[in-house]
Length: 100
Length: 169
Image 1 (tube, each protein chain N blue to C red):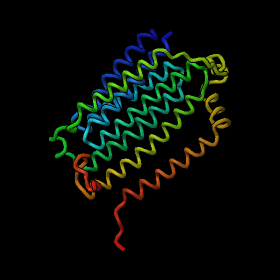
Image 2: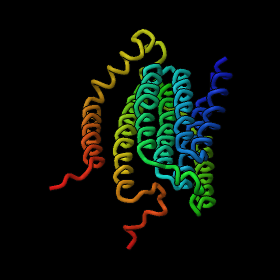
Image 3: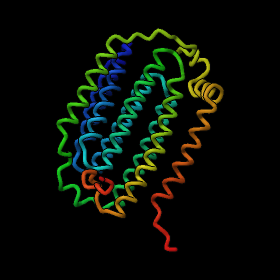
Image 4: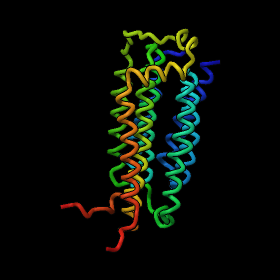
């Protein structure tokens, strides 16, 4: 029997790697991939807690997270395409039109 | 056996997530992400969540990653790969992420789950997992389920509106 803490630590490590990727990378597509990574870390934690606390609510919440992740990927990538049509770059540090 | 499987899955998950955020080529990142999603599905199987493991493979690996690959191939990124992959402030970003990691790990150290719910392994075995999950989802969480469907509808319409060419009027 694996302790609950190991699963929670695994989920936290995945979350923090995703967070580091989101803050470090300049390519906007990899930033979206990092968000997916963070959501997956949270999902591991939710499923682990759901199993060890013997309640299915965590897994229901995981389904909601997966639905929101799909919606976020669709809208985010549409924004990337619209952005690339106006300015051919995916580097976030070159997109400075809204700077005052 | 379960310990060995968990060790294998977690080592692969951590290594592959680091490769996802450090790969220079976005296509390589997406392909590492595919490997990552299959191993996360394996972790779900260890936690007796078969339905979620299947959903993970179908939705994430089957739909979301294909969307990412399509977008990367629609954009011409050959110029982008030659530039450095990290922004100038990456050491500060790494320090912030490490600080969050240390805080969360230390917080988990003293965690003890107190509440024990009604869905133990025995109950799920007699009911079967998908049926049990459906019962909870469609009775107790029916309203959030409907809201999720509205969120998906808004995302579909929003993606079409954002990505289509402006029509000349």
